Length: 309
Image (cartoon, rainbow, N blue to C red):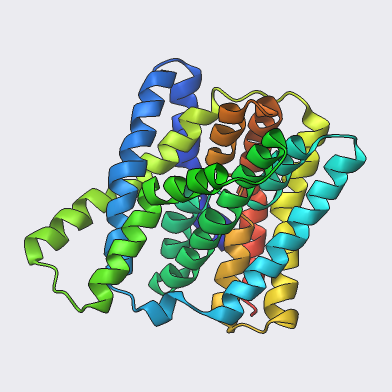
């Protein structure tokens, strides 16, 4: 346990460094936005493309794995939705809170950290988790909020969802990489080296950007944010573990990677959606802050536990 904690410390230390830079004003919110854009559109996309170009489609599409992750995630999604509705919150707020309870920072934190901690074989399972999060639950929140406001489902909502997926650089990078892999297209050495150098910037850049963005987050509505953080860091990995080990038995290693990915703190893109639609942004902000701080310990515990699978 202690050894694993020490292995995760450098990752969270980079987040802490970014937080300090943002808190002191050395790194302004504008600078953080541009760094995030660089990581999202360039560095992380290069990393994902390079990873997926070296994978086969069979390594990505594992139906028991997908069903297990969907079952575990949907269970907690419904629990969080039910709790929100019991508190007399509307569909829009319930959708945002449910998103906080199940969508972790897989892109910026999970991919660089889990691949380094669990080995390169973790690439396929982590990318499957990321794809399900983006395609299924990323679409679901847009459908629920937009449909609730319009009072009905329309082609306009589906068009918005579709365009959002097509414009997401992570989805594009994974898809293009799998096409290159599927067609067995060779990647020239200079191109591969370019992707390697650019992709190497994803890990420090993403972690620093997470920390700097946390400096602008507030800890308002602590009770609700604490519940959502508990759902994300404890209930979500527990439900996913039950699904992967009991409901839809998955290979032990892949199940461990899935559980570790489910244990990650609330993703920053949930805040972007909440702010875009004007639905509970402060609640989401506090959830990101609390879950990220708490995950310094909880992620280490989860990774220690999955060693026994």
